[in-house]
Length: 143
Image (cartoon, rainbow, N blue to C red; front, side, top):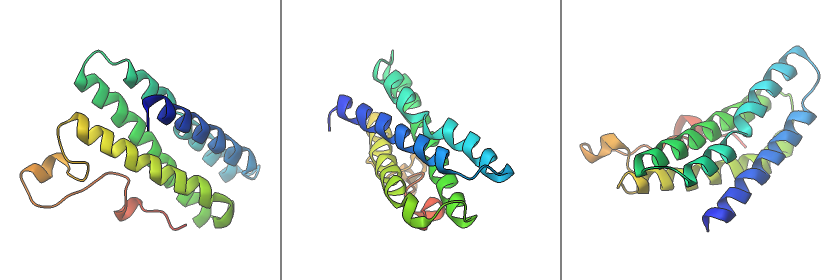
């Protein structure tokens, strides 16, 4: 996937998140979640685009990592929406799948930019365990 294709994919994801936000109930909880989700769910695309014009490799890694963190937060809010019965699991399955795929792509990009294998954390260079933020483990969604 080219950088332009990934950028487009992230912007389309942001638009899908906006549609999820619009579908949330107009309740106190729904409004709170909507505010959180619209911020994190639309933040990955501009952060990724900013990273594409980074001044250094570390600046690139930093911006891409911010985009990844926003996607991980989005994944958490999508999980909460299902747990709290604000929207159905079926309604969120496609956007949840896309979020996980984008997390994996950006995790690989961050790892590559830092000179690691995509499944290695900085700590795993000294240990034998691995940890990719937002992919599997506690952050894995229940879709």
